[in-house]
Image 1 (spheres, rainbow over the protein chains, first blue to last red):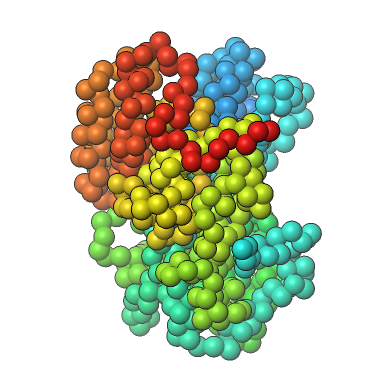
Image 2 (cartoon, rainbow over the protein chains, first blue to last red; image 1 turned 135 degrees about the vertical axis):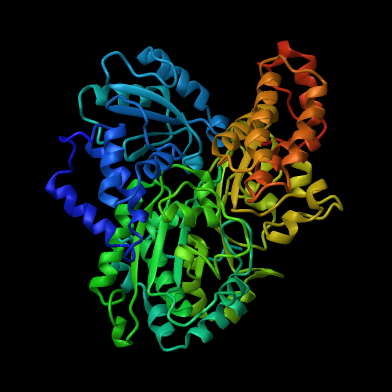
Length: 169
Length: 449
């Protein structure tokens, strides 16, 4: 494990609080919450040394972390841009024009789904239903939902990102 | 007629906070419950006829009564807030606007079940709702409704939030428990049921957010009064999240005596179809339940009006009926392609299959690839039968219901819209056009707008 991977003392306090939610010996339950914390703290994705570090904190085998991290779609297994645009493409969003929104982002940023822009600012992802069907079409950026999307609204959001003004958490 | 039990105070400013919630009668049900015995509370829930609001509709009181109570073994309540069924966004609304209703329901339910620790397993994407609920938990604790020796009763309860990380399968209760234990969301074989061996092999009740919230009005007005609302075995009120091609998408609380026609066309609910279009089809209970064409949605095969309740929506079985499911109500207007819509759903299930059972892991991919070919203008007529054959081989052959949930939408689309599949295969150049209503026309004439 790389020596320079470590949570800040503030984050470590949060980590211990999370582990305390479970009975003694059941600390593995903290794995998914801790991976969220780690992904946020270490640049938006989970490199192997980071997963090993989480395994060490929880006294579990690294493989137990890998198998979980690769199962859940919110964990990124490779580097992503600062702003990950996650556009819902499932039925109800499709009925309300998500295809057009995806096309608009592809053309505006000149990237395909799954790619990151050359400046490292944006990654475009399509995702499955995020529970915003009544407010479709929608996308998630960071911790927040952006709903009732139109091409104009997407253009505004992208501009906000470029200015560093879009809240992520 | 609209009757509100859960959302009656949703419009009040500040109802998200303890003080306002309390001022409007909040936590009175909890106070009342602490004067009852756990058995009496469970009896009230049984009498109410409340059925699980997550989709399966299993009687809640009965589920509670199955909870094993061995000496010295902790019991747990786990609230399923993993809401991921396409078309469903009702729990999100409840948690976002009425977090204390869920917390109060959890206090009463945990007391009835004898649980001293309860978890809310929430889908990872609802990140901001975690903050709302954690604040509500802190407020309730500061007011003495959580923590040690609640209201001097000697009863202790802690509630914790647990965030998932993007996996539809974790809405299945045993997959949820696996995930809460820090593992992949692979559903468990049943039995043993969670009521006997659940979280960390301890007796556990897993209930949906709306189900637990409904316990509050049940204690307030009594189970007998709750049971008088609605009809037959569809008692109480139900949250419906309506979306797709309607004028007023959103979350509505209905008592289950209104017709589907009223729900879609009245201004009190969906407000009709936009742009003067006509109704083509609807998936009334979340993406897993069968899609039905307009004529069968509004009337049963016997010509009776169809109502928004468990029994009426299921009338006719899968041949001509559908299901209430989670209440995720998806409306398709005449411009929509059922084939393309089914393609997106098949992609969803392929993506969300946990991969544990071969029929589901392989079958969902097959279905998606066949549908993709048809949608790309490369379909062959025998593909329709192949699709039918694949879905038949998934249904009933998997550990958990995700297999059925993946098979049913495809089966229903072929059952009712086979002509549309054939038309797309025969006319690949027509893929950009709309097949329209064909012979399953909406019996309601278009409204000029």
